[in-house]
Amino acid sequence: MYALTDRCWYSKTHVAAESCTACGVREVSICRDVCNDTLRDMEDMSQRRQFSARQTLFNEGDRADMLFNVLRGMVRLYKLLSNGRRQIVGFALPGDFLGLALEQTYKVSADAITEVEVCRFERRAFVNCVENRPDLLRSLHAATSHELETGQEQMVLLGRRSAEERVAAFLLALRQRYQRIGACDATLWMPMTRQDVADYCGLTLETVSRTFSKLARDKLILIVPDGVRLIMIDRLQRLIA
Amino acid sequence: MYALTDRCWYSKTHVAAESCTACGVREVSICRDVCNDTLRDMEDMSQRRQFSARQTLFNEGDRADMLFNVLRGMVRLYKLLSNGRRQIVGFALPGDFLGLALEQTYKVSADAITEVEVCRFERRAFVNCVENRPDLLRSLHAATSHELETGQEQMVLLGRRSAEERVAAFLLALRQRYQRIGACDATLWMPMTRQDVADYCGLTLETVSRTFSKLARDKLILIVPDGVRLIMIDRLQRLIA
DNA sequence: CGCGACTTTGAGCTATCTCAACAGCAGTGG
DNA sequence: CCACTGCTGTTGAGATAGCTCAAAGTCGCG
Image (cartoon, rainbow over all chains, first blue to last red; front, top):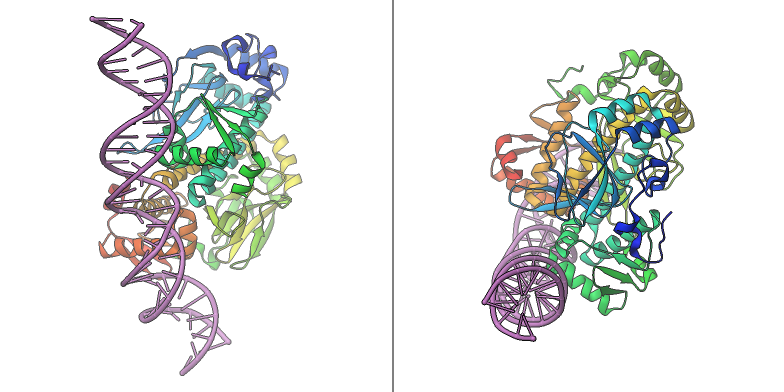
């Protein structure tokens, strides 16, 4: 898949190649298991696009004209409340598909945390394709189911865990996701801010910062620029057992 | 659909008829939009079953041999943490399908809150059917997407809302679900305990009770046996705006 | 009637939030 | 080259929403 010994998997030099068959994220995307005909259809429909850090991909409520497959970088998906409170419902990594539900309007907002490259589809065309291609629908359903399960885990985290457990669970889940896309490393790349982590974990940024500090003081993690190195994964796991 | 002026829609006398075409919950189930052939297949696979209140339908981690469509009653879906903490991730009502993800093991536990009647499928047979019936897959995907969206709303509730907002949002969401299945009424049927509501809203049962009392004191709701009557829906809505 | 399960209410406690100060660092411009 | 600014992160101290523990109230049911 990627060269993974360092964090170059998300760097500019490892952009997925132009062709789907050579695409670097195909192995972890909804297009992994589709047949060749379907893949060709998808390739014909797709356009490559880039977003710079902090650019918006779409806003909750907008007409969902475009669907995205993330190729590189990190995207935050979130909902806002009237008074500015924000809940991040997920961080999208390479291989993640935005718009799984195929619905007419976006149900969350999305913006780029880092520079982001995506494979973009027009929704109408994509939906048409899905209608004729049960293998693609099957993939979409599997991905949606997986998201649903992740969401249920997150409800447990938000509803029933302490601050320390939330942060530990967040770190371990992030690690698992990097493993899944073949980008694992004892050092987790964390381009998001403390505020982002807080808005994902249902905490304040100060509590997140204090909790990171405590975990570092206890030598379970090491805080490094743009990331965290997991030192004692077993003890992190015991925290959330 | 049902006779709805009172709460009889969930009573024993309104059990869905034996035939799928005459089924009382079909209009709100995954089988709503499937073609006649698919429906016949599903009917052949399905078995009617009953569970009494507090009976377990399945436990998280078990092999998912059976899938369920709820016909009558209410089911709680939850996850447990080691020390007994519980997060309820959803209440299943008539028309809700349990096992949308078609996965090999259950990701949550489910037990009956009331007496429950279900339409039950063997997973293997069901999955086989889905493979050959894109229309059913389409329905499953739509239902799964809807669950995913509901889950994201719930993350906002759990991560960023106050106790009062959580309870208000819970009541309004419950009302919407009853509306959706054609069982709406100013009085919401709430057979679950305060502990269940607490475990759904990420609160303690005392906080839920106090919040209900406050909403009742403020005349936004009226607490009645086995339910809550919504008196000033607009003010509840303003609470969560 | 009396028991058990659920609910309500009260009072004190604490995990987390809020507010505030400060530190590190990158970019900017004199 | 260095002051300055803005942004992110850290740390401290006091405030508070919701939790915990406890007691009493309600209701259905044998």
